[in-house]
Length: 585
Image 1 (cartoon, helix red, strand yellow):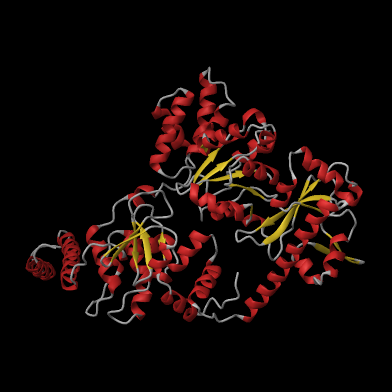
Image 2 (tube, one colour; image 1 turned 120 degrees about the vertical axis):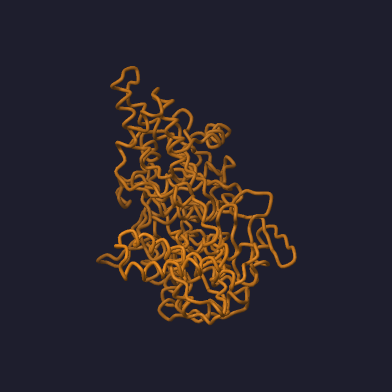
């Protein structure tokens, strides 16, 4: 992350104005220009016909096929796999703009750079020791036994941590690395007699962030290495601790190598360990990544979603791997429709590294290609625990399956899975529906509401409001019966109040991504905009309809032949006459 004063809108606006969005997108995908209209083949989903609309003037893009959209910064974030500060830095550098630096952020950046530099040197130290040190003999023998040659060891920069307490510390100090950088990088700890190495007597796997910076290590215990000299001698793997550069919940091993292939193929493969990743890449599956000594979490899915919405879990077929594939109760991501999560079952209970070592790479590729949806896998796993030959066993299996179905919020998807459960257990669909209703405890799904078409007239109104016409009167949220459009209007009302008439509303300040996506789709709608006087007539007509309906309702409760009734009736007639004068609205 760069040291940029993020509150300085001036820097951000200068970079945005200096960046030609059409040129930026054309560097990644095919762009088609027709007059003032610009369409592009969306790089975020597979398509042949351009469905991404690009507005060069506003600096916005929106795909009407998959819904992805944003501005110049979000495009760089999503296509390059970086966060906003790095996207800003990249575009500023490209435009020749010098950014204002935040002193506090610059200090943090300096500490991070020093820590990364120390880790980078440690990678070289460990790698040289693995190849040349006598004490690394057992580690080299282990790798030879796994089929690792010198080229593979060099490609992945594998290393070996010396067995002494301060081998790395001494080497880095001699190279001029400070104590703070070693501590910040998680390479050393402070003891009574000074700094000592975190990793000792282990085979080392360097871990990089998505940009390719080294940020930590995974250390594997090797047979025949003196365990009394190793840290945590009973643990097979020891990973870097949390630090200013390493956050295991947001790191995937080899994502820096795999991200381009993941984006190109539209699929990521998650395996359990470092050697499994290397084996997958040996087998030609270069979309493989792994968590780094932690459970698979939503942070990992959010990271992968930058590049693809399809993720295959290719965990070991042993009990630990099976549990890992099924452990999703605490995750928000797996059963959302914006993530296609699947499970690949490994042949014969072997892990990917074993399969590659045995020359069965083709079977491994087939298993990944035939991966099945996670929910199907989970349902089958739960149903298999029960005897389906009798009614009691089928009932227990049905309740177990229904517990999974309740986690699917989309009505259509749940219906399809209900049919799957009915076929699997041998019951009718209505029985599955009844069991699911009994299990449901949360609020009803809003998927039906979100999939309902937007009100056409109100959409047109909001499109015009976004242009902020000079003669626009007062518009309020009550002018929108469609709650989605009402929420979108509310989200821009503050910006609308402070924007000069005639200047289009800036939607970049809207924080809710769903609301911003809706506004963006309206902004980039290519249909002609209605004239504001015509829109005013429509708004007045709709308001009159509401007022007339309200008065008609009140008239029924008033006593006839009273002054109040007569006044109300005269008011109603006047409103009805005004409505007729407007014509069709």
